[in-house]
Image (cartoon, rainbow, N blue to C red; front, side):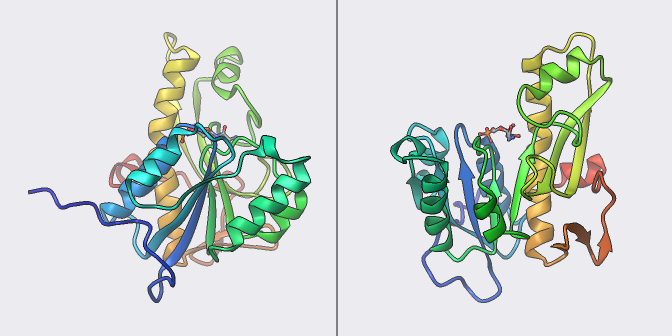
Length: 237
Ligand code: GAR
């Protein structure tokens, strides 16, 4: 018999030792869903999602969160005068949940340096390329156009440099001659759904930190391209 899902978004305060997560999204929220599932299936321990915040009112991820009883909040960036004003409001909302870790899971806005500095070492992002290749948008098509044989995704700490903070981990996929941007995106996204929860698990077990702009896992500095977990490790998530 399947167990009913464990509610991910309980109320304050966090149970002792639990890591509080706030997740920022802009759209579908499939990565959000993978985090919810990983927590419900005990693949990510000692972590509770305190809130999901979207900058777009119609983001389907908000529904996913609400269905799980997680506070689902929209701060529509169009309602703010400028980027600073939006980021100040976003920061205030995020900080109100006292997060240990803030996860950009398909959050499609450039953040101001002030926002990033306030959360330094607590802010991670999933990006659909093997960084430092293909920062920014249209990563799948760019990898195909370049004739690359492999592509993938990265999870990295966020710093003031766009898509440039220290990489925590990467997962690669082969590019086949028949791949289109859509098929490649779908292959990469499946990897994201394993890689991001794995990095959150490392963080919640206190194995992962960023000190002086260097990411460390189990006390050792990570290489510039982070960890490349084996398929076995990813498949177990
Ligand atoms: C993901 O593929 C993520 O890597 C990408 O947005 C998608 C969101 O999908 N993020 C970026 O491109 C950030 N630079 P989801 O809403 O289904 O999780």
